[in-house]
Length: 82
Image (cartoon, rainbow, N blue to C red):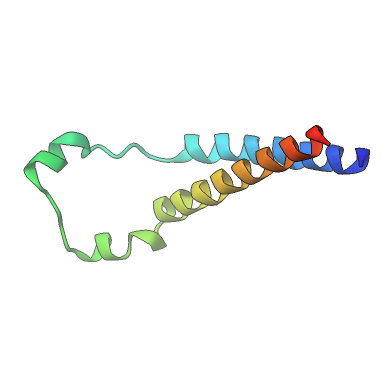
């Protein structure tokens, strides 16, 4: 059981560091609240293929790392409560 704890802690630390790095690599969305008020929705080629760009991949990776962060946090809580 001790080996499982060390493995989970190591994975948790790696995921934490990766999540921080990926979040810092993302660009800021400048549209913000003013885009919501004015209703600027564009239906151009870039908006339709945004998931294939670097920003889209970083956003998807951030979501996956966030899910892994939560799952590992729950797993560590369960392992340490036993």
